[in-house]
Image 1: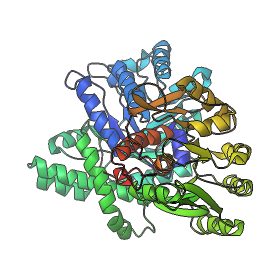
Image 2: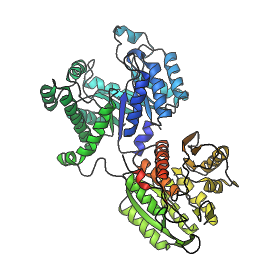
Image 3: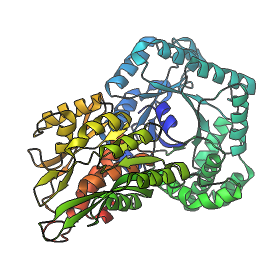
Image 4: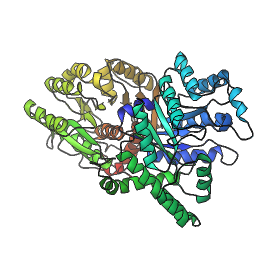
Length: 574
């Protein structure tokens, strides 16, 4: 996803920066680093370019690994100092092949061993010229382009010149601006206010460098001319000769910087990890622990990283394994606040092989529940489950039409009757779902039977047939379709398929040999909803959910001879 689009979806973004492999840091080691970094759920990871482009090959290769193998959004740096247009074009063509959507366009500093004459040997003198050229090139019109800025005056310029160049970058087509490191938040806030007076309104991303090595940071401060607040200066003086204490104090200082910036409404935080994942891990933990105290300190109302609120409009499964019960368990375990609007109560007959009985909730009661949550509280994401009548579907569709939040549609049509058999409870509802729900869906999560019904196909037995169904469902208006193939395709893997209207992505796990899988479909869509509410992309949400479903099925258990649910405790946040 483009960073521009991420900013439209989320209040704020938190990202990490790494440098590409070099003679002192192998590719294999860096892949281990990035694998750990993605566990902390950054909104994106940026990969630097190196002075004069000397690591540009590694930049694209590592960015592609993060994007395509680790399923995390990426920002590839591009410096134009000393470069010809043909070289820039080749680099961007390679990025395009790797599905890299985000570029940080930089002028770049003079490489070691070069003179400032290098600025006259390339086709671009300023980053704004590069950005302007990219915006004129239709081959790259799908890119989200960022620019850089110094919150403190660039060593070559003064305040007015810096702001003038920044204004040029924005007018050339910059979607967002990322800052060089700084240690004094007052400086950043002041710069933001000055930029706004010049009508620079794109999101600003604050570059945070954790001070973990006193000697190294003193050298960086000397080169960058960053001001050092008294508090940081005292930390450097006190712990400079004690590396372990300096590291702990530096991480705490950076964490407090971040919380204060978020409290002031800064929308992007970019952490320079120096390829050390433990730094990112500790900062993310500190942010969560510090936020309440610091928000009180700065007298900002509400929680900056507040819990996300998610609504499920679905039916009640009296046995507790599926429906709203499964949704709320999943929401709780995935760290979001779950709310519900009950549409139907489903019971099971213990004297007739667990046959299902369906009792729709009165329409006026459904309306009151939905009004309570949406207009009385608000939601960050919403999912639907069992909607038993056309009237209910039509009403829910009218609600979804006016929502701007992510919407996950689980098109429940089927209930298990006994192990291995199903019945279609609502065949008359299929057309209403297609007309009233799918056009507003961020994601639709049908199983194979439901996918066939929505796509107008007799059945789905193969991956190719599932891909055909996904295309047809997407054509009905859904932005993304996840077909839950689970264990039903040939082969030794459980396969789910994501289609985003352009490309297919396949998610595999081992097949779990259990008949106790009641509620797996509801739980899948609830987990996807929770992850999207927290800021994950659809791909990231599905990847996380796929792993969790596999583990929950391994821990499933029997309730009686007819049913047994997967274990929702497997979804607990680690």
